[in-house]
Amino acid sequence: MFGIGMPELIIILVIALLVIGPHKLPELAKSLGKGLAEFKKATDDFQRNIQEESRKAEEKPAAPSAPAEQVAAAAPPAEQVVTATSVEHAGTTPPPAAQPAETKDVPHA
Image (cartoon, rainbow, N blue to C red; front, side):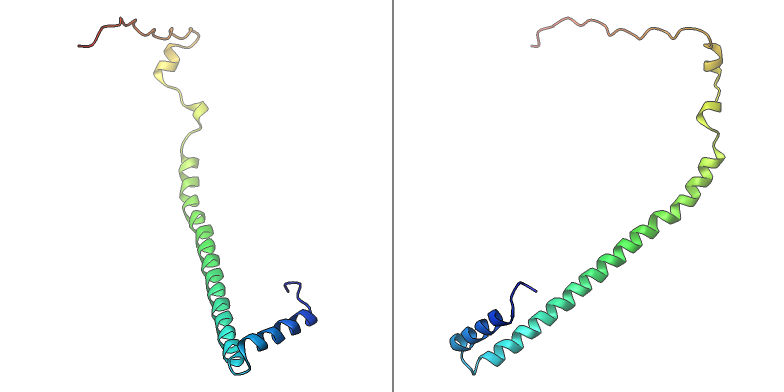
């Protein structure tokens, strides 16, 4: 798991027995086990919530896409739209762009 083999685990348990004592070691192991169980439960709950949210997010865009496709099918393509202005100016060059008026530097009071 963490690169700890059986010999290392035995050494850790012996040191814990010497430091903590034989009376407190079972209580400590019990509380450590409960803490790890709660951590695993919280982790599983978090993963389940994330999966539910991602599933909802995937389903959400799928529903509005059908009406958007219907609207796109009803509208004519941009190449086929002809306006009166485009017919009047057909074959002529576009008007020159308006030049901005020159401004004089006027001191502000």
